[in-house]
Image (spheres, rainbow, N blue to C red):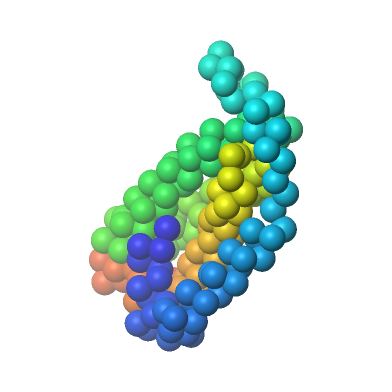
Length: 174
């Protein structure tokens, strides 16, 4: 996340400085830390130690909130960041058209909504309340990343996309 978009935010869009963004992040972290429920007994009762889960059972236990937070957070977070990096890299090097880039982000929207609900439900299944708050903050970062990419797509496409290389979708760069 933010490999290509944060640079464009600070250099071309100039909506704020890195210090302002850092102060917003710290404020959000404090609010999420205060509002995240924490029950130490819930971590011990979690279903996370069973390794014989099928994919269906894993998704069901994640949806209900019976898995440990790290089991829900890290697999999706890693896959999401890999897919976003590859999509952005292909778009900046002219291998994806602008509409293909939009379609990939639209396809990722539904799993992100599912992941957000799952993180919120499983955030009590951690040893430290800071871990639950940090996981919730990272889900909010994903939405900020998507809003930033929507802004780049709408107002700054010539900065992000290799418009000189994409002949089929050249009109989308204006």
